Length: 291
Image: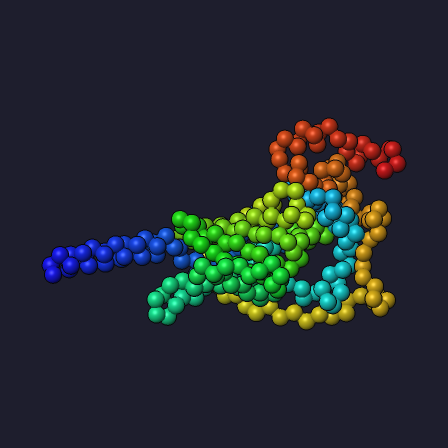
């Protein structure tokens, strides 16, 4: 009898140690977090310049789509309240994070994130469930599952609607898979987004965002009512035909950057490309050749 009690005690200790270790590995991310805009500020708030695709590992297919894009498109009522997808919403304003736990076991079921921009909400399932089949519905937030890797929250998101990498016509396809990492250091939160897109990207694209914990702010509502901002013919969609979009030259000429560099591609992500860039003629050097 005494031996059975000792075995039971040891078993209980092992179980408690296991659960304690599992809980210890988790970080509490709950609260309101204020965005830090010191990184990529022009791209995030004022918006990227037209014709600036530098540093994006895009291929020819999405570059052609970007060349056809017109900024007047977002003035259409059906586009004005279009929400930012979950892999891009991290670029804007504050976020609120809270947990959903089982009321009996206190096991972490899900983590929820609310973005200030368009007040979108997403759920990150933490209960080990599988992603839905490929033909399941795609949404702007996608379907996300998470796991703790040490003190990092790792998230995998699939089933995203078509979105964008940059707000100047660079598209992200609905076949993309997004991997995210949330890393908390006291009152600071780092959010890394890695986008793998077999349709439009030659290599993964990585975006980093930083947040600061606050007790003085809340994520308010963000109502959006579309209005008629432009007069257009019925059925007309703002666009540019291939080869006719002079906006593609704005960024290159304004900053005197060789057009090849401004058009992006995987090679433009790496420091070695600076040597290639120095060998290319600048717009100011081509001005006398009729460009």
